[in-house]
Length: 94
Image 1 (cartoon, helix red, strand yellow):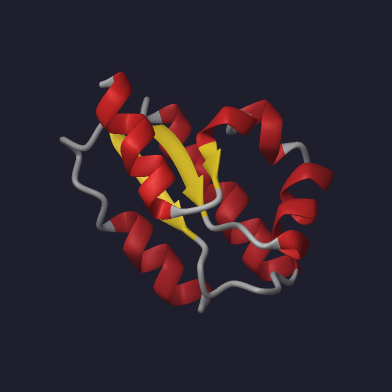
Image 2 (spheres, one colour):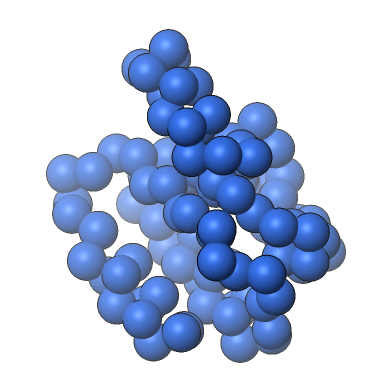
């Protein structure tokens, strides 16, 4: 899963200003997964990409908060319960 995730992040087009990471199927994240997401988020942030999370379940969100990924790098108002909520937010604000 980490390799797939890294490949997906590497394929984000340079022209993209916004990246939405959908976490629908991630009920649990281990240390290697957390490190991969943290690294990817920091890399994308350095490339001036605006990041959003959707559908983050309990344990992954606790992990994000434990390392201050949320809210220090990805603000809490960039985390949505559903992809539709995220898309609606973006359509109203962009």
